[in-house]
Image (tube, rainbow, N blue to C red):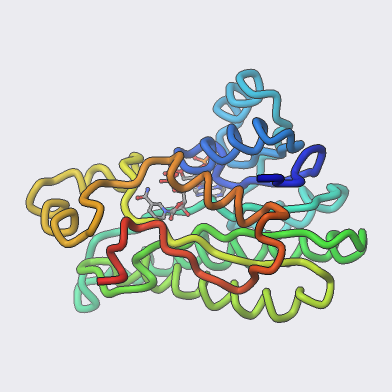
Length: 243
Ligand SMILES: NC(=O)c1ccc[n+]([C@@H]2O[C@H](COP(=O)([O-])OP(=O)(O)OC[C@H]3O[C@@H](n4cnc5c(N)ncnc54)[C@H](OP(=O)(O)O)[C@@H]3O)[C@@H](O)[C@H]2O)c1
């Protein structure tokens, strides 16, 4: 399969985390010029030494930081992977400060990066692709996920509206919706047998996703192999949301 990504510049947010770093590694293998972002500069520079990517630290909650970081960056593609899990709470117990923060990072952060990256992608006139990392939590009701699911539901909606608005510039916008990956974000909760067991039992493939299981469909959606795909929210969930 020809990805066409060789020499193309792709920004990956959340690159200091599990799914983001796996995506950076796979994009580098495909010959892309990767710009890795996160807040932790030490982790970014370790990743850069390991794989040879560029780094661009910024905080997803600051419009000024996102705007100035992206001002002079020519991009073909973006992976909006930075995110935060929030809390486990019912709608009756939820801490609205946590709700605000999870929306700020996951939904508003995705919007800010899309806003400033798309402006320069449109100006460059070469088309492009954006992949938003959403979650299975936006597709089905998961107990305790009121805030996180709301933030990822917003990401799915942004994906569809952005696909509509950017299509005329030959920029495709898609999302992936992974099931649980045992990164620190999810391990403390889903790693508990009484919590994770029933989900695994209900899932046709009966196993957790790996970071690499997520990276491959992300890279596919960025690639020329997906040139007629835009506006989809693709579950990476072992069939969980299909049954
Ligand atoms: N793990 C799962 O089970 C799972 C399942 C479905 C979807 N997802 C989604 O996949 C994405 C990556 O998840 P992961 O498990 O790989 O997470 P992770 O290992 O916890 O990494 C989270 C990433 O988000 C970045 N981040 C958090 N807050 C930020 C902020 N304010 N500004 C800039 N960057 C920020 C972190 O960067 P710094 O630490 O450098 O700030 C880090 O790179 C997230 O969007 C998550 O919601 C995860």
